[in-house]
Image 1 (cartoon, one colour):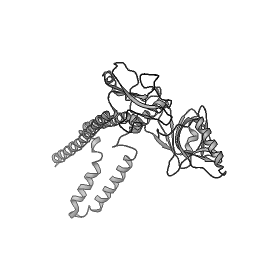
Image 2: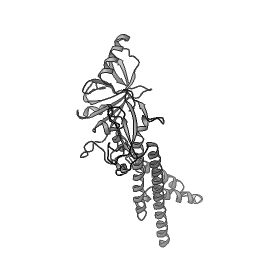
Image 3: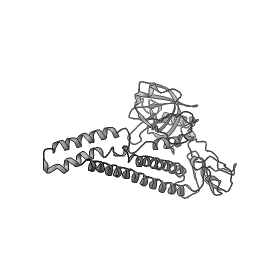
Image 4: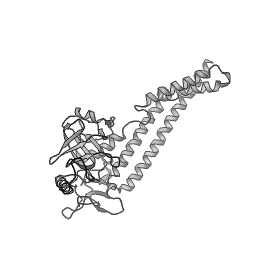
Length: 351
């Protein structure tokens, strides 16, 4: 979605002129084009048309069959996400948008069509429309999305309590069904034991290993975030070339620098200190006016510094993430086994 052209006033006028020459009917619509657009919430009309205002344009957005995402607002960080947030993005229904503050920023990505002689963003099966409400600068929006989307636990989430309850009821029903049949005693015992297996990690003494599991799982998610942030320049440099042309005609690429200073922000802020190495790569727009890459006119284009080529950093963080995840599940299983042994010891002593 970040590779779509950013809609501005010039392109808007061009689309309007083309629609006038096509002589579309009031009820008809012309073939659409894929664009990005950013602005602020203005109003909602007819209960299903969102109006988004930028410095140059005001564009309507059809909310029918549209996915709207609300990203968590985190105070005290100046609009930049310094770490993984415990809050996750929320998929909201379009009828809740009227309660959102007018100061909220909106990112729109999808198909822009001509309806009733007016350009409007619509959602289709081929090109689903994405509407994102956020509260950070455009330069760090992609980073914020990556960080918040990676937050959350794979083991415990909103569905976990419901799943555990239904599973426990089903296992108790199985145990009760075969309780009066001596031939199925092993089935009854297995069902009763299975009821408590999912909650074994939260009881001592295995809780210590569960704490280690959560820490290692959190570390694995952090490494995946770093991997995704390092991969951002590769969205533009899809080949082994050192530069490529963007949709707006800018020449995007990278240069190797041997300076010990910090000429650009780090694409992965957590690797501070590594840029002191003399082999750093700066990604940005290449031009003849500056010896080093500069920011693009498009605020969503990645600009920053990495201590190595993205491909190499991605491989390292991928390996670290897999290793951390393996250790996490090892500690979780170790905690379950420790609790099972502890329970059998108690039962043996009581017998």
